[in-house]
Image 1 (tube, one colour):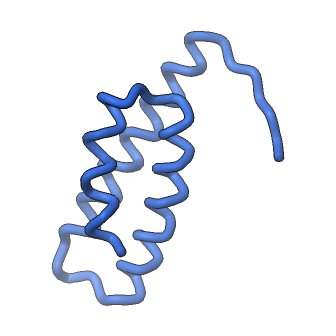
Image 2: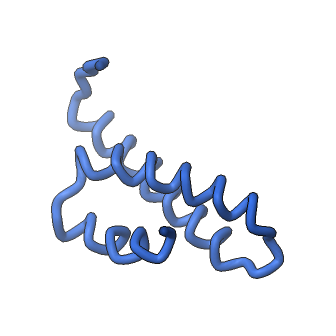
Image 3: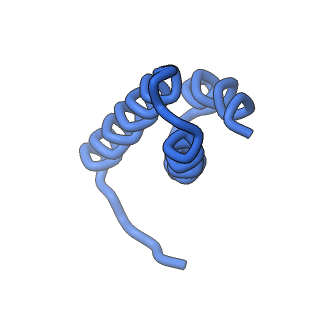
Length: 73
């Protein structure tokens, strides 16, 4: 397990980067042109990024992405 210290500005930047990455992956998953293997790969990565985001996000912010993670299983 690794630990990192972030100041407030760095936390906000990390929050922004993770949200944008989650949004981008949700957009990719909604694209019907992608085949099953690519979707599985994106879904696996989504779960990892979601867990990272869950460590810094408030429950209200997290709920936007938590509802979508159930559709990936």
